[in-house]
Every structure is written in structure tokens, then in C-alpha cells.
Length: 296
Ligand code: ATP
Image (cartoon, rainbow, N blue to C red; front, side, top):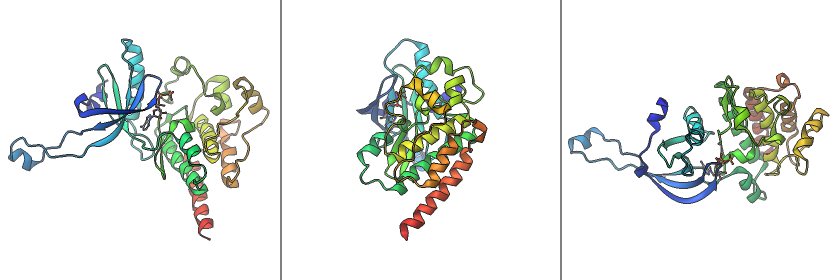
């Protein structure tokens, strides 16, 4: 892929440190990245002396040594997608080592997965912070919507925590451009049914409107401090319940305006759901209202 070229890193620029996660293709490690120093005019005059540049902590996704080119291509797919985005609430691609063992080097989210973070900090997390996370996620999704991009797997398990006041969307393994309709049948073996819109379950239809449905479920997980949706219900029973009009219940402490927004995201008819642009604006207002009532 010609565009991947610019992202090629030398393996010697990265040192692998402790393992922080396990992905579908291999382990994820913390790494130290030594960016190549930019030479300035002065250093050229002084000879070939390089400027010192600071090292960066990164996350490195590795792909188990394999000689299956199709697998390796599938692994790299996520990096190709990530490199197209530039948003403060989307994990950034730093670069790749495209020869085996393939490494995808990304921005590190120091506090790890959102679900685990919500569970571990449930006592001290304020409602305003949970609303902030929902808002930040909606800005990332509004950005993807403007780029005509469908994520397809919006869930708290795919959101990472950079700092206590900053979350980032990750995991573009399932995401596709809207026009690319051929892919999902083969690549989506385990479907996240409990997060999916009815038309995705019934007809495998994925659009920005089905992403909106999933966002509603993800916002619900956030307000529930990491509880998964529809616990104890079988995947095969979900569609019947949704078609009977059943929806996730109001989380304790959730502002009524937010629950009303979630409920709109769960409109059976895709065209009746709000856009992410709209969701972002509404969440901003909810956030401001929360701040006002907080300081009263
Ligand atoms: P799956 O398809 O099962 O979700 P995957 O192959 O997409 O797996 P990820 O979920 O992206 O892999 O990564 C596995 C784990 O590694 C994550 O759940 C998270 O704990 C950790 N991880 C991944 N990327 C980062 C990152 N940028 N910063 C911090 N931790 C990360």
C-alpha cells in the first residue's frame, strides 16, 4: 500500500516493554519510541550531529509470527484505517513495522480499557465526568460521520482512557467505509448482538444510523459504570425483545435528557435516529446544564 510507506518505522526505533493486553492477532505491549531527531540547520553546519529528541511511550500491537499473508494483511488493515484519522478522541497511529513480526505502533492510552476503568473507579467518578466521556465519544463519532465512515463496533470495550478526563475511541478492526459493503460477512464472525441495531441483526445493514444505535448502548454502559447491556439474556432472544419495543432501562443517576437522547438513538426506524452532529450538540448542552447545577 503506497500510503503505508510514510508510516514505516525502523524496528530499532522502538523497544518493547511490558505486555498490557491481548488482541485477536497477538499481544499488545507498552513500548518506548525513539523518534528520529530532526536535523536543523545548525546541526548540519556542525557536522552530522543530531538534535536530541524526546522519547515517547507508545502502545505496540504485535501479530503472532505467521506466514499467512491474508492474516497479516487483515492485521494491517486496522492501521491503514487509523492513519486516515486525526481527532483528539481517536487513538492515533504512530507507525508500523510492516515486515514480520508486524508491529502497529499507536498512541498509548495510559489508563487502559474504559470498562475496567469505570469499574475500578466507580466510587469516585462523578456524573459530570461520565457525561464528559459520552460527549467526547460523540465528537469522535461525529468526525467519523463527517468522513462517511462507519465504525460498526462502538462499545465501552473499544474505548480507552488516556487520562481521567480524556477517553479515546480505538479498535477499527471492523470499521469500513460506507460504500464498502462486501466485507462484513466474512470478517464479522462473532457479532456484538447486544450492541447492534435491529437492521444490523436482521439484514447485516451497517450505516451511520446503526453506529448511532450502538453509541446509545455505549453511553448506557458508561452511565452504568461498566455494566454490560442485556445481562443474562441470550443473544438469540435479543431481536424479539427489541421488536417488541423493549429497551435498556434508565440508569440510576442518568439525567432524563440523556436518557431521552439514548432512547432516540434506539428508534427502530434508522431515519428517525438523530445524527452524531445533533447528538454532539445535545450532549454539549447537557454537559453545560450539569456544570451549572453542580456549581449552584
Ligand atoms: P479484540 O478484537 O478482541 O478487541 P484486538 O485485536 O482488536 O482485540 P485490542 O482490543 O485493540 O485488540 O487490544 C487488546 C487490548 O490491548 C485492549 O483491550 C487494551 O487493553 C490494550 N490496548 C490496545 N491498544 C491500546 C492503546 N493504544 N493504549 C493502551 N492499551 C491498549
